[in-house]
Length: 270
Image 1 (spheres, one colour):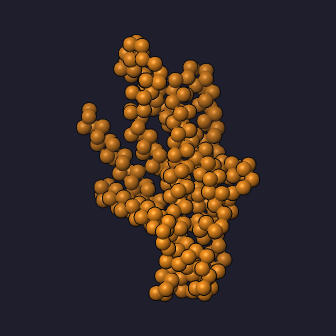
Image 2: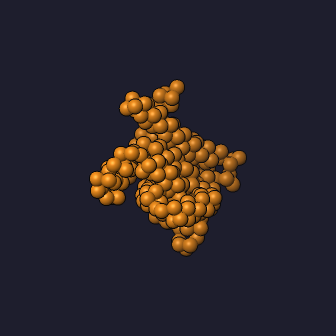
Image 3: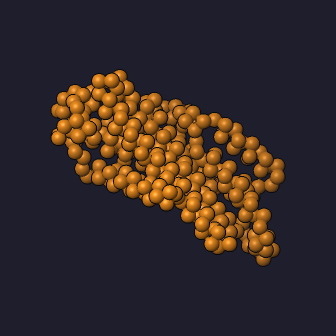
């Protein structure tokens, strides 16, 4: 069952990336085209109907997939880089500094990711795609940093690291040779899970009007626009909402599959 969900997640995630890449060169209708009629139902011309402005809903959702993946990947990259560097530095820190860093990370983690992202976006005074990526990445970096700190300390306590230090190996060599290769499996699974949370955070920010501004068709923005007509045109909510659910499920399936594969590989090495 685990392998089945892993394969299903890979298929769904691959489909999402294919749709996102397709929008760079083609969409069923131009995003600014409003000739479809207001809140029209599904038809051969508009498979998912139209929105309240007469735009093709399927085209909007396809572009939303590109924005969700861009923000998710960008925020995961930012959070992963910052969190990994901070966590490794905390792993090497002395007792007093390490305790202070651990307390600071706990304080940051106590705030919800969405709230921290909202504060970063509000501080920048302008909502944009880059601001959303930076805000979500900074918010998730504390979670990654705490995880990296814990696993780094576990690696640094091993005998082979002590032996490397006795042979004169510097901290950079220890990090590159011993710490990063050993924490990579755990970090990879954590980043995959954070990727899914970043997609949800982007949709939440866009729903609140703090994400990418129009004409970017974010899924959260589409949900916010369609909530007033949910009873008369339910596809306006069901299509972007369903796309968001499927993408997050796919990411979680892949993350669970990666964890199982890495656990099996670790057992084989042992």
